[in-house]
Image (cartoon, helix red, strand yellow):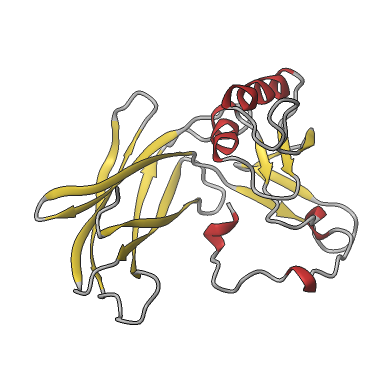
Length: 238
């Protein structure tokens, strides 16, 4: 059960300057929600741990003041805080070396943690160049050229239909890696969060379609009929 003032959402990005992959800036935007009738003051803390559970860097903290929910509001009031820290010599993530870190988010009140969750992430940078109509392009992961050997993945199973048991998702990912598949395109909707987490763990790139058959826009599709709800933010697109 979530407390009345709780962590609501987050966005995470790792950036690198001038092709220098020996250091990365971790940038966070953390949303806090308030469903009470009073303004709430809390502290947001984020701490990074490596694969062995050792803390990396210092905890990042910021104070947040979340307004009270208005009397006629059907949703909680929210406020966002931004956190960042530079990390030296991070272990980079790619399909060949899927190094993952864990970040723990905490919401604190009067020096005590009242709400928390953890997520895994990788330090990585994907860049696509050459989208100039010439028919050629270059894609890099952490500054190195990458070629995708991929498949389109629908969410279905012979026994469960669109309900796919966790063990089947694991087997699909293991089979993909054994067949030298390094990328998956979801068709045509976001997949199970378990699949996304397993792609992070095993090392698979994902083109995450969001309720539309985009083909990366290469066919010049008129997407007017599929315009996205403007209330969604970039973090809603994986």
